[in-house]
Image (cartoon, rainbow, N blue to C red; front, side):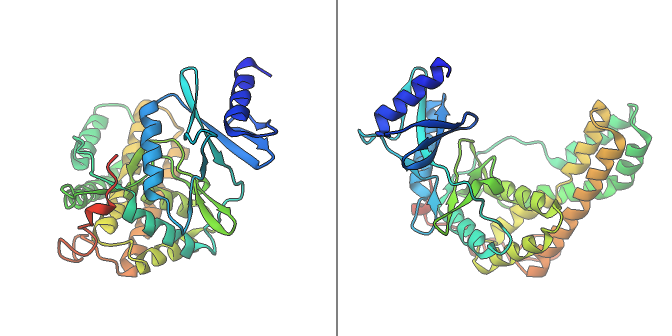
Amino acid sequence: MNPDLAAVLSALQANYGFRQVNVAREQPLLIDTERGIKKIRRWTDEALLHLHLKWRNHVKNERFFVDRMYVTRAGLPSVRIGNYSMTCHDAPRELLALNNNEQQWAAFLTDLSRTSRNPPINESMTEMQIQVHSLFEQAKQMRVDPEIWAIVSACYSSACTRAAEADRLRELHQYRRSAFLLPADFSRESCKALFDTLFFELGQSEPSDGCGVLARFVLTEALQAQRGQSIGKLLQELALKGFLDRENADLMLAEWVAPDEWIGLLQASLQGDVPADRSSEVFKCVWDQKIELIRLLKNIGVQSGMAGGGAPNGSEGQQLDQSNTLLL
């Protein structure tokens, strides 16, 4: 056993009072104790650790577990070793499947959207429609794979329209007082089953725009074979539970309307990173799936600011009680 790992195990045993400590896996570090398998997280960024402690304490509730964490014998949330800190967490292994658990997932996400909030970060972002136009003009002057060029040229008009709509939907909510937060790396692995209850692993990543993260999660799931029906049920449950208010619906739609796959295809071709046949196939799958998700959301009848319909600005859900705002 390497000396660093030996020091970690010794510190864990001394600070948490474990009678037995054995390594179950090194990456990520899982230890086997008389109290079950525990996950050990290493934090080199103290500010990020404090942010996560505040975040998890703010959103924890009685309906689901939030990254259940142990305190030391002294009642501290972490153990300092050299130039980093460690935290100790429960480590359930069973994923909470999305299929047949759509109501539980939707209830969890709806609860989280009301408490996991922070004033949005005002980032200076280039408008997507400008990015699409600039990249297309740049590609005209360079050698692009003929197959890729045929696709991006045929879809250019649609990409411009979609980019403009994504910009418009995001601009509708650029002055909102608070934004829904999710970890940037949120995935199916973030939600486990523990005692028939959803266990949410908050993890260690930075908080990010929750609607964008969730929209990308839904897209990833929808692209998997035989998961489309489950995704449709999840969106219906989110609508029934009130998650898909005007703001959340608009920002998720903006993520699906935005032609990131068109931009990615052209950039990959310009850089020669991906074989033309593979990149064009991925592009077509994502482009078509986004259209299907937009159709699904419209059929559910949620409030949206999409061109051609939707609720008036200021619909229910935009103004939240400040007591539910997490000031990170």
